[in-house]
Image (cartoon, rainbow, N blue to C red; front, side):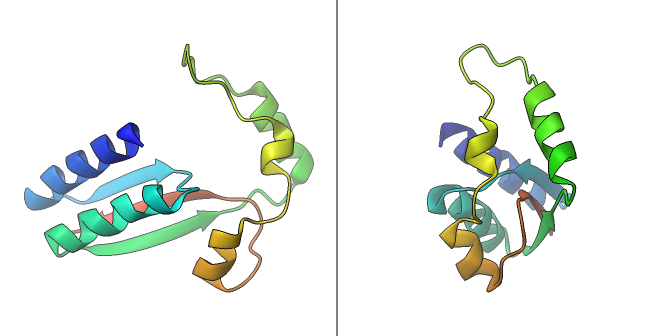
Length: 109
């Protein structure tokens, strides 16, 4: 959560400066999603959510298996973690099954 809070703080700072901000994050927990809502609320900014889907499951799996962010203490997620059903939070947020996703939050001041 510390990384999400740091991102929120930087987003707010830039929004207060009149800049647009884009955050590329999974947002897979309520706490993570709340940081985006908080930044928008505190700065009076509009929050746009973009849902990206890789429809080709083989390509999705290939990308995940070959991914290496170079983070020493944070491993990459296993394919089985991302290949299951859409999480309940996404169903409640979008009202439908949209597939696997990476969330991008875009703010405009």
